[in-house]
Amino acid sequence: MYKAGQSMVSEAPPADDKKTLARSHCRRARAMPVLPKALFLAEVSRERFRSDRSGSPVSLLLLTLGEEGDATHDVMSQALPALRGALRQTDSVGILDANVVGVLLPDTDSRNVDRVAEKVCGAGGYPVASVVKVSYPHVILDRLQAQAKAVDDREGHYFVRGPKRRAWELRTKRGIDILGAVVGLVLLSPLMLATMLAVKYSSPGDAIFRQVRVGKNLVPFTFYKFRSMHSGSDDSVHRNYLEKLISGEAEQTVSEEDGKRLYKMASDPRVTRVGRFIRKTSIDELPQLFNVLKGDMSLVGPRPPIPYETAKYRCWHLRRILEVKPGLTGLWQVVGRSETTFEDMVRLDLKYARDWSVAMDIKLIIRTVRVVLECKGAV
Image 1 (cartoon, rainbow, N blue to C red):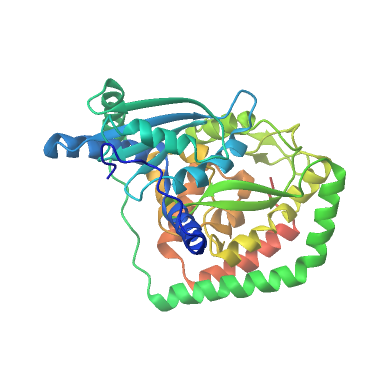
Image 2 (image 1 turned 90 degrees about the horizontal axis):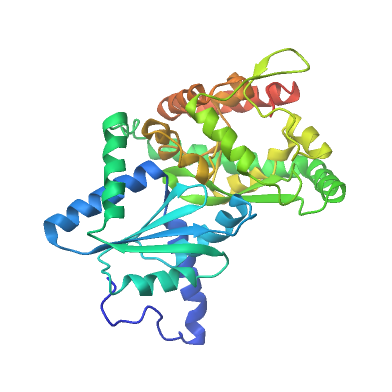
């Protein structure tokens, strides 16, 4: 708890303790999930009721990140790790809009919220356009409480866990992930090196694209792909498209090759010539083998979403990333990939989370290789 009069900045640690302190900050940052809007609103509602019952203080920060012209994924990639590392385990971070982050501070009163805001904004690595600081009672918290109730009334409670997996199943799945990632990296290293050079020299920018994605239990991680777009591309086009896709309003496009109707962005000007090829052949996904080795992802699982995507999820959509690790491939990639609607994709991910087995994973990996070689439905 932040006590009145207590400085938020501690004395500098001895030199011998600096590495230990840095590791502690990294562990805390990795452990703290970034909540999508629906779950963050539920946290606000819960803390508001707790404050009413016990009289304990609660405060809220609303941070507008970035400056005009900044790409949202760049800002979020910089901000979220630093932001989580500056907070306590009892604090909550949520995505409320494309570039608006909420920070819920239990047991923090109006006298201390300024200190917390100063620490959060001074964490470094990201620009903060504006900060709103409120302590309960306040009309902003009342409005967020009303939004939480509206979501709860409309969606109901969908967070029912699937069957608990036995330890040997989880260990076997992880073993397959490690073996598959190592073998894949060894066999595909010449192709990956050639792709890296082609991307690097075909357009300015890094060959590897890094982005914050949301993993199991909503814990963010750094996601790797070969860059298929021009550096610094505006992500508002993709944000708007995802919002329409999630709401069921996205238009289908017709494939020039086979006439199939696909759910994908047509003629995206941000994609480079090399990018179109590596997307079509799914070569752009190969760096995710490093995510699998690190344990952020599995070979098989749901597609890892972007934070601004989860902010638009309905409650039942969230279960697809609560129960299993995201994966390189999954049921939706094999069944239809770009031909699948968003809600169909979610249902396939939920089916996988409920029914997965080691045998199913092996079958899906084999089927994915066949689908990729045939270039079916690639985005």
